[in-house]
Length: 101
Image (cartoon, rainbow, N blue to C red; front, side):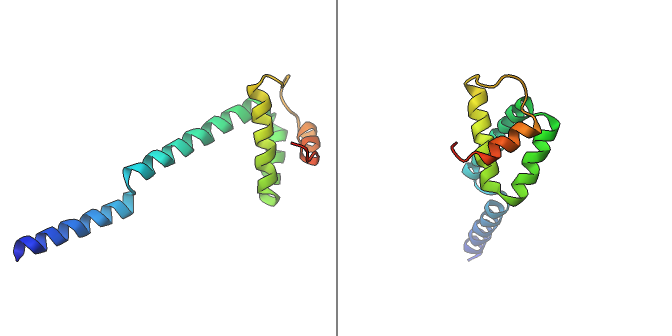
């Protein structure tokens, strides 16, 4: 009976640890999401000036889905080499008003 209790305690402890730390698949998935977010931020830092980043941050508070669309648009343009120089606040505001991306 002591062995059964010990096994039950082990299973309970294992369940607690998995709940606390998640399983390894979740950790890998979280790390992948974190790397993707870092990559996005890095690209956006290269293509946006300070005022443009501030504008996107403000827009994210009001319209997060629109912000994501503008960011995706800018990242895609950067990846294909279609951007010349950094985007300013004015260019971001113009992009924000265009709904054709």
